[in-house]
Length: 192
Image (cartoon, rainbow, N blue to C red; front, side, top):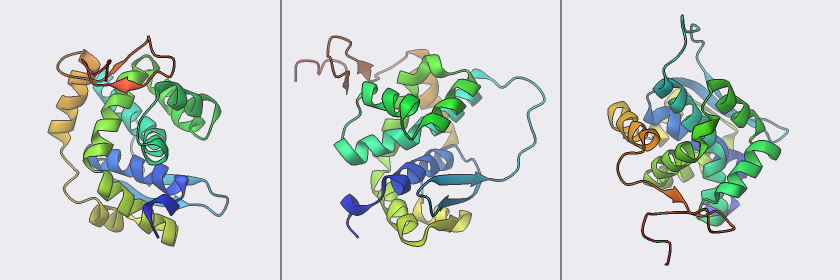
């Protein structure tokens, strides 16, 4: 199976798994259902005793947006904010967008997309391998996911990177609002 033949559901769910793993969130497994929908299963977690911090909510938001960002990377090789927003609000990412809204970080959607894109691109080969495997067998448990995503976990580094992204510090992607398609670009690359 070549990467171009991987189902979008497998790419979507593998992208979520990559971000979960990056932050060290324990997941039980990932599944593609007979109807073509997929889901990452998490262990039962006790509900928080109080409101979550902005960083905790931003991490959940970055994990939620990762699925549609992964699809965009797979389909187009680039991320267009308008396409991502359309998929989140009207396409297959509606439940992910609901999670982003539930976390109260929908105002940070561009930053969450940028962060998720950078993590996915760093580990894209592993994401594709996980997606190929998931597409073949339809279900992977936590051990199988871990074996497909070695050396992805780095809570401290990714938390710091996300903090910079949502804090507006350091080099980051920007949305060039002058462009109709809303491509995300590195600063200074607007002319090229």
